[in-house]
Length: 365
Image (cartoon, rainbow, N blue to C red):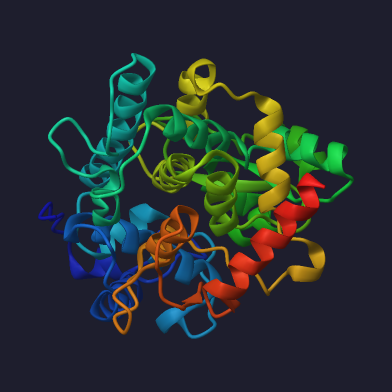
């Protein structure tokens, strides 16, 4: 990516708001991560994905931030720290989402699609692992449908009611960061504490913004506290329930959910694609509720199951020449795969697949 945004050193190093990481720190953390990370995708997409990891590092105090958190850091801050034009970065992320939407439209139209590629034969998300995975379009639509809905607040509420569990949930909102600061909150608190009873107060204070407003960021607002879900489990469970193609579709839905956090016009695009394929997928909302339940992390398993981000899902273990996505797809397909540690070391893939088999057996009994 070569869209440089030249600014003075002073303007690059001074945070625009409290809780925003200094530009130099963001740049150094990116350089350190990029130097040791190889993803199963093109170099340009790798850059787009790693940028989002730097935002997460700043929020959590990971990487070179050494425990110091900057919870109001946004992707805009990261892009500018890397001397990139934020709008160009957003456009490139949106193009990847658009290709998934176009693939879904072709599938709905009945086109016979054998691989998850765009009209020019390039793999969706530029992920080389998809280049040789033969799929059927209906199966991919099943994964796009359930994967696009399973982490929505309403679907998780239904899963809690149906199965008597306490899955946490929330939604992304356009947030005015200046109002957020005036309310004495930050992005970390907004995402971690339950705010279902605060929504009217937030709206009255002008916290929720619109596309085009100044000082906005697309931020996760937690409504209900509770255990979350595992994206790894969603992909594998979808594959076990509806076949390998559904696992591919669920991965694509999760990738869209990641990329839509930083695009020119913010919206819930994975849900929009789910609605697009709903009728042709042959599934219904109950199936999404089931998947939400199956991929939820039981309270007693917190810290013991993987929940790979898009970056970790595509990150290649060089000793094995394998990323978690390749392992998951191979497991679903009954193909060979190497034993590897998932996410941040919560478990190995062998232990994880044993958990999946056991949970599915209990679910079906």
